[in-house]
Structure formats: C-alpha cells, structure tokens
Image 1 (cartoon, rainbow, N blue to C red):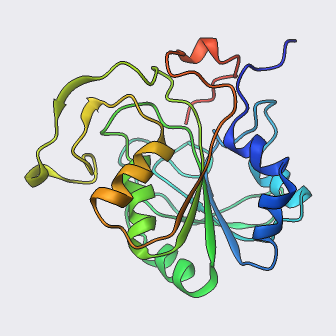
Image 2: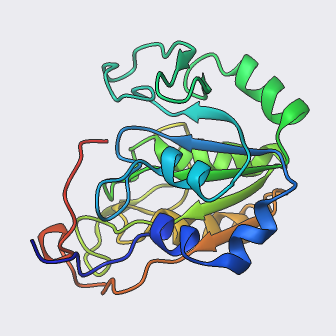
Length: 217
C-alpha cells in the first residue's frame, strides 16, 4: 500500500522533538473525535501518549468522541476506553468543559477533520476555545474539497451564529488552521495560537489526491 502524499499536522507534531519538548511540563488537553488519526490510521491519542505528551483530558465537538451522535444532539461526557481519559463535550452544554479548561488545562491540541463548509460547527468550537483565552495548537488537516474553490455568499456580520462564526463564503476554501489565524486577527481573539502545518498538501487537491483514508468526522 503506497504511503499517503500528505503528512497531517499530527504526523508532523509527533515526529518533531522540538515541538514535543514544548508540551512537556504542561497540562495538555486534546479536542478530537473519530477522525483524529494519523496518515497511517493510528489514533492521535495513542501517538501523543507514546511520545510522552502529558494528556490531562479529552474534549469532543459536535457528534461526540466517537462521532455517533446525530446532528444537533446533546453530547455526553464520555470515556476513552483504551486510555481511561475522560472526554468533556464542547457542544451544547459545555459548562463542565469550560471549567476543566480554565482550571486544569494549560494548552489544548485541536485535531478534527473539517469538511470545508462554513456551517460545520468544528470551526465555531475552535474559535470558542480561542475566545476563552486558552493556548490552542491546531494540528492542521486538508480542506477535502480543495483550497482554491470558493462558492456561496459571504456571511454578513449581523448574522453570525454557531453555524456561521465568520464573514466567509459557505464553501470557504481554507483549512481550520488558516481560518483560526484569520479569525484571531480579525476578531482579536485572546487565546495564543499555533498552527502545526501539513506537509505535502497542495491547495488544488481534492481529498482523493491526498492519498489519505477518509474517516467520517
């Protein structure tokens, strides 16, 4: 089986000793779901623990840690059975997640696959983290419908919502890392931001050209 063309942000992070050294000694959280795998389908949770990253807690976006929850459904507190780490929901009632983030987390890694549409709520969750003031590292992933095609009207500021958090087209042609940088600048978000970029991704790639397996997020 040929190796994928693209190395994801998670692959870059776990192979970079300088980046990993910056995580040691910090209380690290990970926001992820079932799409949080490496280019060779290893779970990000396991890879980070293997590299000595001190994961304190997990956090889950809409659909939950395993992706089993329906659109708009409440997401419960879950446990990752392999590691025993607790995943706190950031979708719906995120009171507990916010308490844990403020009290127990110094830095949060964000690693979930987006779909390239403004209304997908992972972007809103990412911006919520930056508004809290927590340090966020985005482990970047491809826009599966390319980074060059944009379609649809640009959202007007007065219509911002959880399914429209930025003034961008419906099909925005950006990665979550790029959107986070843009929002931090335009919305003056207080959280420190670092984007761990991919290697090998070209903006005109559709998903099939990346060589990566697709996991429904």
